[in-house]
Length: 101
Image (cartoon, rainbow, N blue to C red; front, side, top):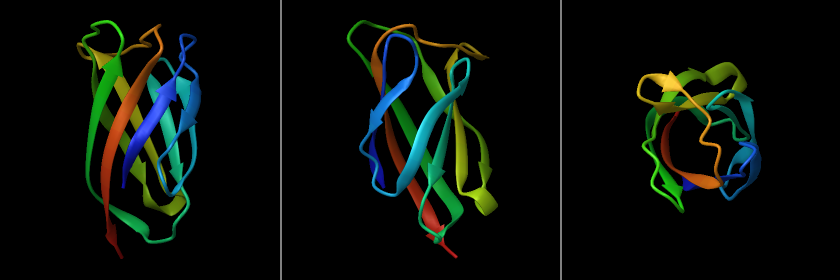
């Protein structure tokens, strides 16, 4: 599945267009929790994230945790090695593959 999460200047999630995603919310500085709906999302195979912003920002997004029982994926937006809010409107593009178990 793929799509994007829109984040506003206050670092709150304003929308997402990822099919199968029940919710996406900011849960800490630079941290976002994604909860999926489908029961087949038991195994996380791979995930790639890219940041899109109007101005240049040096950010990397990585997986912090995956909890199959609750279908919850926590990602962090990093500046260097520190989870950091961007402080600007931007989007995180996602390409996520699950194993049907």
